[in-house]
Length: 203
Image (cartoon, rainbow, N blue to C red; front, side, top):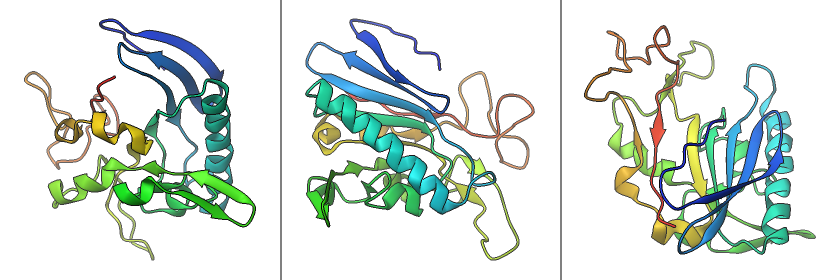
């Protein structure tokens, strides 16, 4: 993971792993815990196994939040699941909801209490009616999804007011480069089989 810093930000490395990097980012107005992830694929693990993996990651993130008394956290990267799949939305896994109001609740199931994440990626489904996603993988069996939002950003509800929803975009091209091939799919021969994801948050 490469982090390019422009401006007055201070970044400290926290827990590092094969599949993620946790850092503390201090800006002028607030500091937050950021997780940059590239989680295992569904081709390697089933959703149940991935759900446990997501839950283990969330607990490590919460440990850092408690250690640094941090209320603000953001996680961005390749989750390798869609926003609506169980590892992302399960209470015992990532706990990332599609409702801003719901995300502000602290839920308890049994003896376990969790604070939730809000997932802004749901807002992109309406904006990408013909191609809802940044990764194309079509199957012809029981699951006929063709486009997937595997690259996502999720935030604690305390950061919703700082998040620029207008600048949450899947990048198809720039002034000098086209990320799509002639079939309008990600041009994996030139860059990647995933389209880049961009977001902006003010700290």
